[in-house]
Image (tube, rainbow, N blue to C red; front, side, top):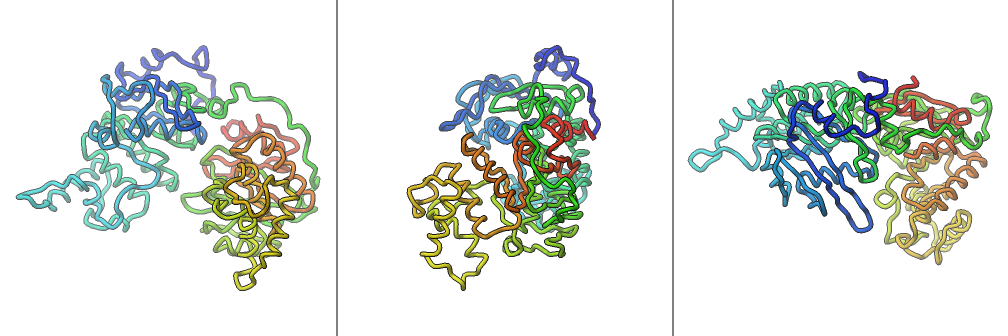
Length: 528
């Protein structure tokens, strides 16, 4: 990672606009917001955000999930109308009623998922909706020539007559960029463009972006990867809780300070964790139930080694995009690993699907409980019984009476607050929905339980209740893989902590000898 680890020369955490403007080398931003605010029902997504993007620079937008990055992009591109503030393009105030108006003004956006037509040719995708015509008919020869020229600008040679889906995702993204710059693009916005790319493809993309920068195009880059941020950025704007935390020159903002500003720790606490979690002093005493050796998947997570032991919590720490959820999905068979070996209870296995994982004693509470966890229209009983019934097979149906007994037992054990088991789960609070998901998997008597952000979006009381119950379950021999964006949670409950950065495991530390500071330093790359 090529960046300075020294403290910035600015006298405070917020350099003045004049300082950065002089450093940027251009007095007029090509795109600027002044005091932009946007509110959704019950949520202040943006609050008085000032942002500036200059011609010929790559400016990275950083922040945790929910910081306001996507909302700001949607305001800049006409998806949302701001509730307050102004947008200036080339020094003049503008109002975009739609993304089409923003595109017509020269603002082009590329999202994480390639938004093209895979069944059409490369040339057709580059000029879709604006095909040159001759005598009222599409001039295919001109389209092919112009498509070749647009790709040549990126130093890419393709057969533009071939279907887009004949090429890998990385090439499809290059085609999307070629489409964006085949018109008079002044601003190019890339929202998580590298999430499905390997290291070589990322390097190729970055070389293209550097060339575009030299041509004067302003590039707004959104990523969660620290190494990529410092490899490509001229300046960095940090968002937190819907506000602009600050704007910095990338060369003068250390990774430590960037991480602290993203997570809200201006001065990281030096408080040691409250108490070391009890666990075997010698890891060899208790053999792991699950071992991953060199397990990875191209474009998702680099090959890594982890193991989950009976009666222990293994925490996964890292920023959003570090590969935490991707690792969990590989262990649960939701995504197939393309490298490495998974061993369960001493035997190598292949997890081709979640059904295989459940059969081997693994349960999984996903990050998004509303989309991937609960079925809101079904009752608490029906939601709790889903995994157990699937494990048994639909030919061995669990009777309604027995299902009610099992559901009532877990409602009582986990303290789920509900009228009865027949109440629709969608009517429960977030904390009680999360407990019902725990009940779903505990009913299958798993050996390992994967918990991905189990305390997100619930109140403090429910959060501590769930964490205390996790520790109690470990005391009875359950192994837990615990993922949380809140490092304090990971440190407080984990026996061991595996630290991930940029889709790689970079360290593993014992939970009883570490603290938040240690983890943040590892995440930032300053403690390796």
